[in-house]
Length: 158
Length: 158
DNA sequence: TGGTTATCGTTTCAAAAGAAACGAAAGTCA
DNA sequence: TGACTTTCGTTTCTTTTGAAACGATAACCA
Image 1 (tube, rainbow over the protein chains, first blue to last red):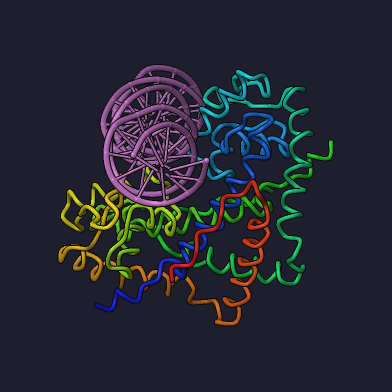
Image 2 (tube, chains in turn blue, brown, yellow, purple):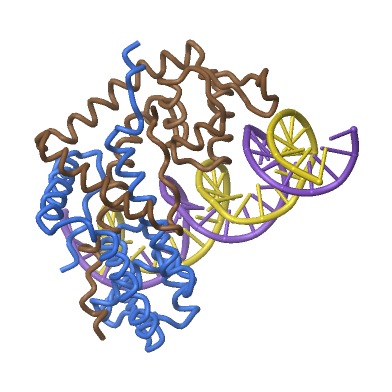
């Protein structure tokens, strides 16, 4: 009957999910309100901010989104004129995705808000505290990296 | 063009989501594989571990699940015989949910695995590091608590 | 070279999600 | 009392999700 001592609100996986869900939901108001973007569309767009030409596969790998989600997000962003899709020249299977001017303008409008949101969020956390926090995050990831049943960690974006 | 320096993989909300998604997905294998539980069903069940009789509303409040999700998870768990639903005596609107013996057995089987998963996850993190980590988590929550647009934080389970 | 295998992006399809509306049961208050 | 409001859990309805299958292209290799 030992399970009676189990406390959900102190269970680390739940705590991580709770914080992440709260932050994500609040953040999505930031880019969803004015620009009607979903989480997937936001991630696709900001990934494009740093890399001029990418494939679906690359976004899938770097932004922790499964292939169908990327495919759909890219199609929607194309339909709204924020990016363009072209057939690959070298490899015909690949699709070359790049930002349009409208996409660049949208990014230029959203990114400062997103950064301000992050700054506000961490306003009471000192740089040392954040370093230590992130080092714990890294340790948790490392354990999962060694677990064959865990999803692989996306590579760092450059 | 300042957005070109934006790096998704260093953006805190994304880092939180990435870690949480990786942990949750791996954990769900633990209780999903043998017992076929969804995240919502798992949360409902472990909330019941500590409180004998609860309502849908209470689970909704404490386990960070919206009402339809709780309602459906409870119905499925009832269909599988892990819990029972009874009409409230005092307040006829409330539903009194309690574990069955089968539910208790399932909990007794799953909770040790879940705790072992957590122990394994934090194996390389010292108690002090975890305390500091959780204090940063708390600081981030506090900022959201002051934000009227953020979802309210669920109260601590006792 | 030709046959097999792997990878690309899309689509299918069944299940899950969640905002909104709902009926039913309390609570409020003139 | 009786109208109005609030809260409970469920259901409706549309959208999203994601595993699996798919056709198309490229890579491998005997």
